[in-house]
Image 1 (cartoon, one colour):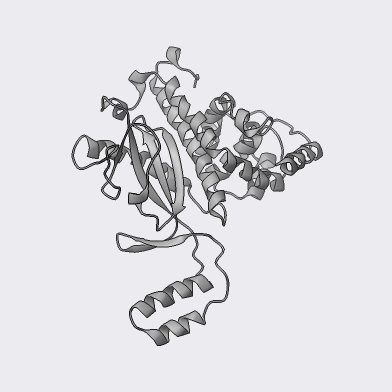
Image 2: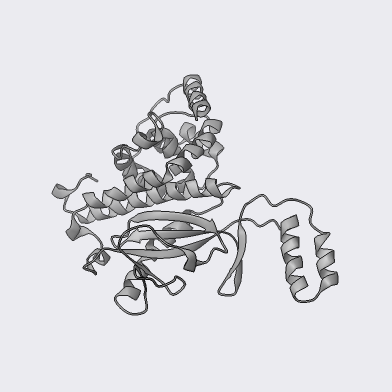
Length: 319
């Protein structure tokens, strides 16, 4: 990590500071720019540099820009030059290679980052939290899994090998032999095949644990063929899951109300996840790092939603 820190320092000295321009009126901004102006005051007060390192919050902000705009490292860096709101949100120019290296640091402290953003729930007034927060009189967590598709490589050696194995199981040895000779390249993205409701998926699986207030507490990334029944969350309290998970003394399977209604609230995060999900890297760990950035982003958005329901005089952040 020492080498990465020195690279960051050299990059910051080489690239000049920004020239700031006045922001346009908020009502004239597109929705993404509005979101950036909303989350910046909260992000600046979360003390995330305590775990990331001094002066590194700008890199996390650029990763949020990548998630929000579905853009590459290069495009995120360039947007600081051409988009006034992004330049104001980030605050400084950085280099593409330095930003790419910084994802490793995010991966190392990903759980701590999510935990810090989760504590925003404690700053909300209980009476203005979502109705689901008041539906049970004991500590409970909502659990669900989401498949994350990755490119499987239509002409990759691995794809034809997997197809050949299926043909062998059905006794088509000649077809299997032919398939083994068709692969041309190695698969770039690390993932596994699985089936859900009769549809094949290649990629990863995100196992999510959220509070009844709908803040994300835990994100675990596994291959797509990982069975939900094997998942065990270390969090204290009762977990409420669907029938794909295993029942246990600390895990209820939602079969009747109010548990079925309550568990459905996990789809709030699922909708947010699929809105911004795309393959962020060829390795599992890099995609997991970005999923935790997305989780921090989501928790800030949930906090702001609660603040908007709170009377202006009692808000933590004035909107």
